[in-house]
Amino acid sequence: HTVNGRESVHGNAQDPRFWKSFEDVYNAPSLLNTTWYVMLGNHDYSSNISAWIEHHEYSYNKRWYFPDTYYTDIVQIPGTTETVQIVVIDTALLIAIEQGSVPHGFPAHLASPQQKQTWAAAAHAHVEWLKRTLSESTA
Image (cartoon, rainbow, N blue to C red; front, top):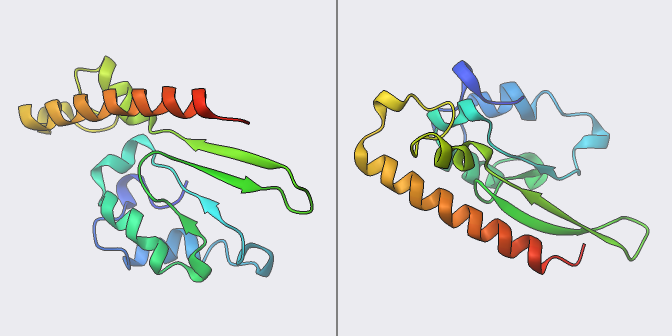
């Protein structure tokens, strides 16, 4: 629960909310070199998602990792030759398929027909990406 909900980011990648809710909160020395795999929550659709993606460039040690609303990364487990695959999905977007193409948490009455079509296409692309990612995984 970081920069979401009523207090969500509406500015740019340097919005003070990133520091108030993340950078200045999780600042113990043991956490400063740790990668944080960030994902959206349903209330975050009302925020500036581009700022979330771009914040990586301003985050201390670039620890804020959010390349897109859904993504995968393969990470080596420290001290071993083993890896783990992290798969982050956008459940709000996936729910859009079931809710008439409006992401969960986004007020349906504010969505234009074009937005609904865009979200429906994005949700279907996400499902295909997820199927492909899981089928190709060696985890």
